[in-house]
Image (cartoon, rainbow, N blue to C red):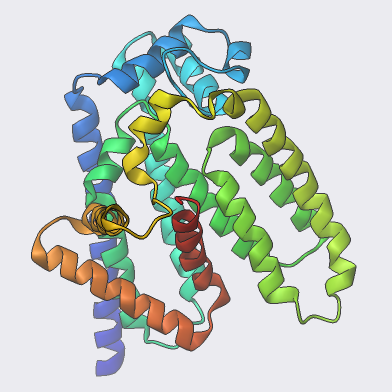
Length: 325
């Protein structure tokens, strides 16, 4: 009887803490949202495009040196037309997406770790830590309360990962669902193409030794060919015209890794990884130490357990590093 009481007590405490984390996430974002901080120049130029252009214009390169997905701009314009031309209307959609991101982060964690060997209590502690980091991260709060697409990128990435793990069986209905989700994602979020590429790697990992792999190739083509065509159109229509733009290259120069092994190479590598760890948890020594430590532990457990699903996150991380060259 005492064990049952202890279990019920622990379960109640866990749910209470989880509820508090969710409430904290919502509260801190609403506080920052209603503070209505000043619009910065990049955000202002997005707003100018939303107010001045028509919906069809979002399918063409944008003025004011802006690059944003057409569906994201269309929804911002809808909110602007319904709610008026002011910061609250134009920042409302990213705020909503932040709450959706929290939900899918929670669901994705439960989906990934439901069969892991460590105890239920350990899973609960890790989940609370994960949600707390997400809810309190300064970048996540900022992206939830400004009229840029980066908060939407977070939401779309989480939905794409959740979808492929939830619909991993290659059946016609699952392929059609993923095709719809992927098609929307491409026009909603620029980084979505990296995650969709990871979809293909995931299928190879789980089906390459299957006796039915050849039978599944046709369905995989049904999924990926329309997505490739859409991204090709997106690239040629919206992105290719600005390839080689000197101002754009100079602005992002510090984020690209040089292909020569000199002092600049190691300096940029250090800065990229330092910024990555710092933006995860903060720049204090305890925060940096815990972040790096947890990353190493997670990588070790993934390799040891040969967890194909979790390994995709590390593959995506490496893919982004490789494309920075």
